[in-house]
Amino acid sequence: KNKEKTDLIYNAIDQSGGFYRGTVEAESRSIMNIPFRLQSEELEQQFLQESVKNGFVGLKGHRSVGGLRASTYNAVPYESCKALADFMDEFMKKNR
Image: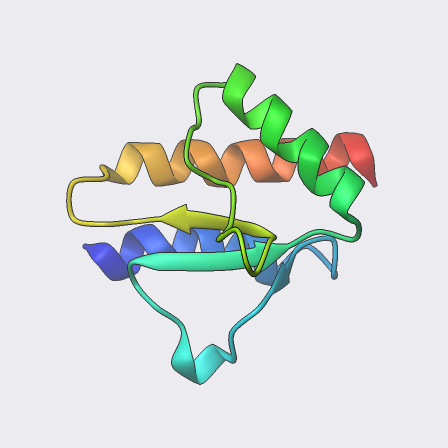
């Protein structure tokens, strides 16, 4: 189940044509935390602001590393991961 949840978000990153960039090699990817970046810090801030307006919280990356981080712990339902992946696709379409 966790792999299915993370695949939704990793696919949004991998299929974005570089709009989203994963920060971990594919072989080392976590099924609990998915760190990623956008093309600029300004765009990351916009992503964070819009994500909060759409009901997503806790996407800001670690304070010493920056970027963004999606958590997919056991308590996070599949539907939430699907909603985030859909939001990521829509955000990309609006901001390319």
